[in-house]
Image (cartoon, rainbow, N blue to C red; front, side):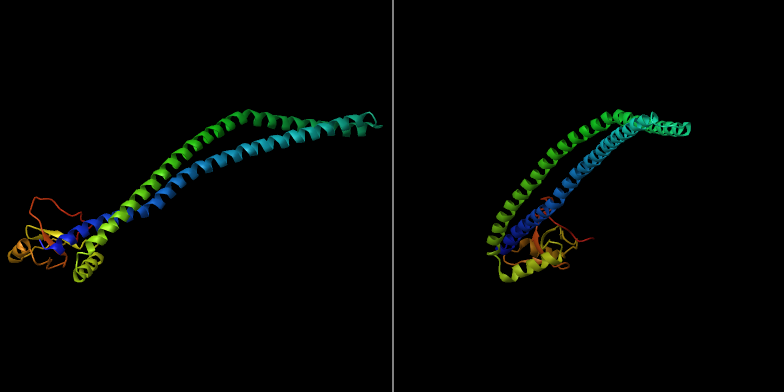
Length: 250
């Protein structure tokens, strides 16, 4: 095998891994954001429940305050009854007293209703706080995992870049330019096998003569007669030596 072809094959395999590393690294922010949205749903639920509980407590305080206010007015009005001089004035104060008593009674019903419902609201809020803490712990673990994976891929990326640079040094400018051009034009696949006369990139069959030349050559690099990818011979049944990022549709 031509030494530059061997280098290009290794370079292709490394570049496939580099692409995979870059894809993995670029996907990390979205994965972390997904975890944050998951947590935000729990936080929103807790905030909503806290708002409901606080609204109930506020209503309770307001009702108790109104009861105190009407109770004071009731006492004051009763005190006036001893001072009136006419039956008409007395009846008017009696009606006023009855009105205060009715308001106090309605407010006391409201207070009891709120007090009866508060334990259920507070229990629901307590459960939601527990779920939120569990979600926070889970999300922190997942985010840390994603960050560790990113660090691992970044280290692998750095090592692969060093290998790629070293391999590129063994390839002529002509073939490096051709290789890079093919990578851009052919979905990342510049070097591929020819198996049983067929290019594994575009599925085009070479002539028997050209196939034998590709198979037996040690001093020349061949390209596919159709897609122009750089070809290397592979025995049928050996399995694909390179991880193929993409192939052309048949």
